[in-house]
Image (tube, rainbow, N blue to C red; front, side):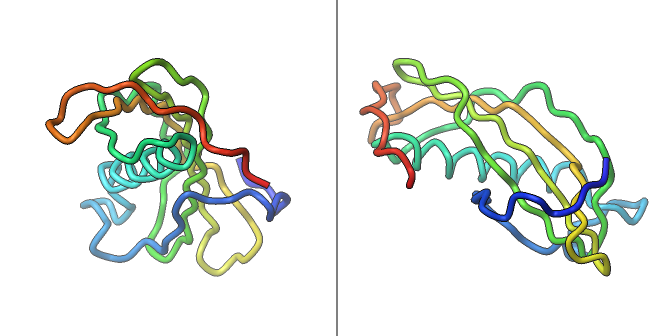
Length: 136
């Protein structure tokens, strides 16, 4: 699932280069590393999309690892809000890798759906304050 870099205007929640410390015994990036960054990217989107700044992850589902990620890959995590409830928000995160040594070629490597719940100072569920102003 390789494609030329087409939509440079898409705003990544996070973007980073995978390092040797991120690998598993097979020499590819450990899936748990990708999952942790998916969680971070989803949290960034939850805060950007609402007026609330404190969320906890309650579910990560439909995680699909399409392709491996390798040392040196520039990995972008794109997050989009798909559902907002009274206390929860669900985010779709798509992960793309720009392979080391092949600039401009992107590979969709992973995607997941993550649900967060808004919490207050005492870690109790609270209502989400409302949507932020649309991005321009």
